[in-house]
Image: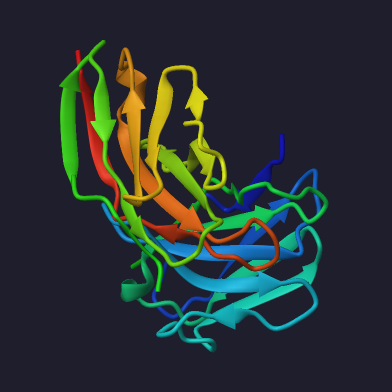
Length: 117
Length: 116
């Protein structure tokens, strides 16, 4: 089955650090990837839709300059949290859709737990 | 705008019992897709079951089945013979389509606890 690899799974770093999270589709090509943020005991909140070769589409209220998204290939999208602060601490999840297979749902990565000290 | 509502924040049942999680949604579309996802403590998002709106037959996956009532815009999940490993957050989700940039619209989730 389709596998999405998300790395790293856990990050702990100091305030002011920039953190990059990778989302890779291992056995399929993904024109579109999605980035979510999940607060404790809450549902997934869509942050942005990442499109290969073009600019990401951000949801209302999500700072583009804060959360940089790059989708340079059909198998890799990255989310960079720039100058991270404690309020950016959260669980981030990516998902991807197989462009070669119709009628299939999104495949999810295992998520990244980000803790900013 | 489409919305998904899960009215049960938390439920608990004894192992081997049957439990039903409720989900209602709102849309003006006639064709769409509905999903139930499971998120165990490991935080992985696992697809449990899916339903296409144009199919009248309720989807079934082993111990998991849905009661899809299109007119009522209801999509409940029934878990039969519940097991300890079913303990997780369960999210109901809706999407208009599975191509291009169609987004998933998520419910707030139901925390399900299976007691031994």
